[in-house]
Each structure stands twice: as structure tokens, then as C-alpha cells.
Figure 1 (tube, helix red, strand yellow):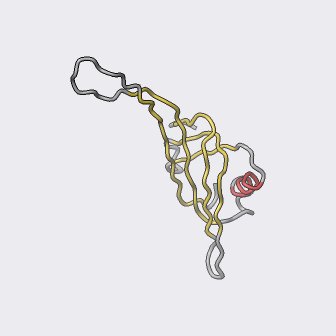
Figure 2 (cartoon, rainbow, N blue to C red):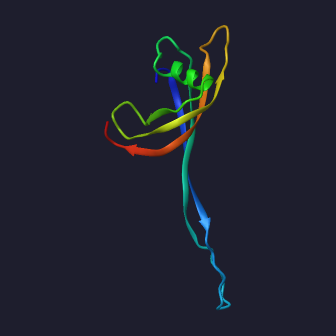
Figure 3 (cartoon, one colour):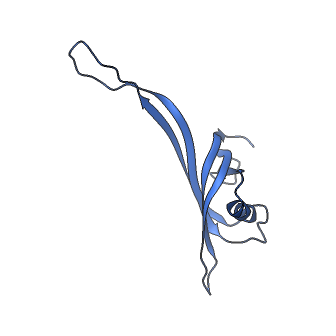
Length: 120
């Protein structure tokens, strides 16, 4: 996306407590099993709807008329690893100043599987 300067991603994995009673009188250690996974995060930068008509303009549309979208978060432009997945856009924050670029930030909630890839 054009003029996005930072992003953050939170990957969550819930665990369910399945600790059972013990009959041997010794210490009881908790036991867990894997639960549900989820992800959410945010991106921020500067507003440029004209140069970024397929990025920020789409996010704004999805904020005003909620629908699923997708996101690709790369560590750099050199073709290294990136995360991708379906998202719902949760919020947008906009500001304005007479003598500065317009700062923007957007938050998203993952919808489905988050994938990490080192290709494409």
C-alpha cells in the first residue's frame, strides 16, 4: 500500500485448561490443549487516496460498508517473508494539519487463516 509507514500484527493462540483431579496427593500441574487461533493488527502512514486508489480507498470503503478484505504484510520490499490473510477493517483514524501530511491509521480483525510465506 502506498504511503503506509508501519504495521503491527498480533497472533493469538488460545489454550483450554484440561487439568484433571489427582489421586496421588502430589502436586497438581495444569494441562492445556490447543484452542482457537486468531490475529489482528494495525497499519499506519499518510493519506493519499489518489495515488493509492486500490489500497487506502478500498479500506475506507470497507470501513463505511463492512465487507471482508485481505491483507499482505511484508517485512520489506526485497521479496522476503510476508503474512497474508482475510480481514475485516475495524477502525480508521484520520487527522489534518495545515502544514503537514494527513496521518492515518487503520485496525483490522483477522477472518480465517493467517499464512506466512517466503515466496510471492
